[in-house]
Image (cartoon, rainbow, N blue to C red; front, side, top):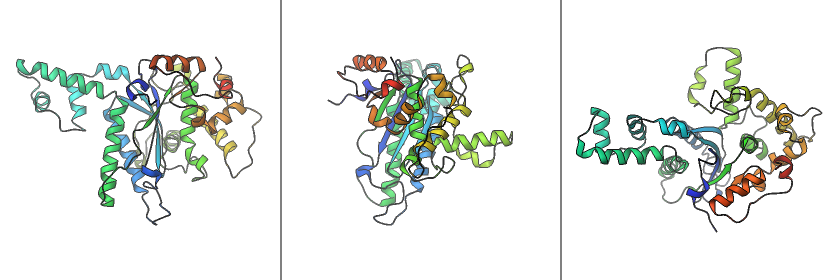
Length: 335
C-alpha cells in the first residue's frame, strides 16, 4: 500500500532525504533523444538553475544532485533551525520570490505594520508559508511545475512531463547519507555517459571539484562559479559541533568517490586498492561491502536507508509493516 508523503518525510527523525523524479515514459526529455534527433540538453540547465533559486528561498540545503537525460536525483537537508528563526518579514520576502502573495502580506512587507483587525489573517498566512519553506514537497512542486511548463511550451504541447509524484528516501544516519551522496555523484559514471568526475556535467561532484580547485589555486573565485549555488559544505568531523554541514572532510570524500568510481567503471577491470580510503576505515566498512552498496543503493533500499534497527523504528513510526533490505547491507550498516 502506498504511504503518504507526509509520513515518509519526518524532519524530527532525520533532516536528510534522497528524492528522485523521472520524465514521463522515461523519454529523453532532458537530453539527446536518439528517436527524433532533437537535443534537450539545455533543459538540464533549467533544472540546475531552478534548484539554485529554490535553495536560496527554502530552508532546505542541497547536499548532492545529478541531472540526467530522463531523471534527476537530489539529496536534501531540511534546515529546521533556520526555518524556526525566520521573522515574519523574512517569511513573506522569501515567499514573494516564488508567488504573487496575499495583499495583506504585501502591504505588511511594504509598510512594516498592519491594522489590528488584519493581524490574525497575517499571522495565519505567515505560519502557513513558514511551514512550506521547510517542506520538501513544496520544494519539489516549485521545481517540477516550472520545468514542466517551460518544456511543454517549447514543445507546443500539453500533458504530464513528470512521472507522477517524486520518490523519496529517508537517510537515517551518516553512513546512509554518505553512500547515497556517492550513489548520486557517480550516476553519470555508472551510466557510462561520462569518463570522469570532472566531466560529469550537471552534477554536484563536478561543482564541488571545480570550487575546490579554485580555492587551492586562488583566493578569488572565477566568473565561471557564478552559475553555482551554495551546496551544504563538508565541515570535517572535528567541526561538527560548531558548524552545520556534512561531518567529513571533502578531501576524504573526494578520495573515496574517486576510488569507488575507478572500481565500478565498466570500461576498466575492477580492483580493490590495498589501502582503503580514510572514510571507510573511520566507519569500519569493508571495501567489498562498500562497492556492492555503491552500485546497488536503490536495489538495497526503498523509502528509507540506514542501520537496520533505525530502519525498523522508522517504519514502525510511519505505520509500515516491513523494511526493504538485503543481507549484504548489514555488513555496511551493522546494528
